[in-house]
Length: 111
Length: 117
Image (tube, rainbow over the protein chains, first blue to last red):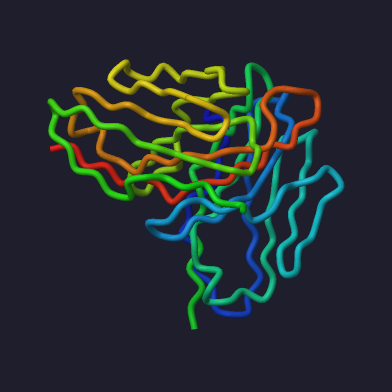
């Protein structure tokens, strides 16, 4: 089983749609969780950290379920500019900061 | 300044060449990373430096040699690479090294696109 798993997609959605991405992680000792966004041929950029209580930033909502080892990202009112690959990232404490990336989920928002 | 700067942006090298990738950050971050990313794949961790000491080596071949001269700089020395080593090499930094408080979101440089011929 991979350490961090995501549905690779692609998710093709119309502009204005709501879309949800899921991520599961295998190491129960994982401590920090993030969603990154990566545009084609660019570096990953932090979208948001994921907190146990859930958190929201504008159109983006992240949720964490430690019991199920599951993280989600909800995007409301999708924009064309949201088209990118969304990477789930998990930090596994121990021996330094080991940030492990999921395989990424590709989103294409269409007119 | 929330930048991680990598040089060069592009590099073409032969299999017998020796070259170095450079990374710099001035955010006072104490953890720095090298990642390798192949096309349509996620970044794969290679090395982690925490407080200027190598803390993680993900079984990377010795033809890749990291160096952390000081808390702001991270180098990756390349020697006798293979064509399959062609990839985007990403440097990242995060605020804390080890410790109880995990403030570990990482900031990435734009990467060096390496082609081995």
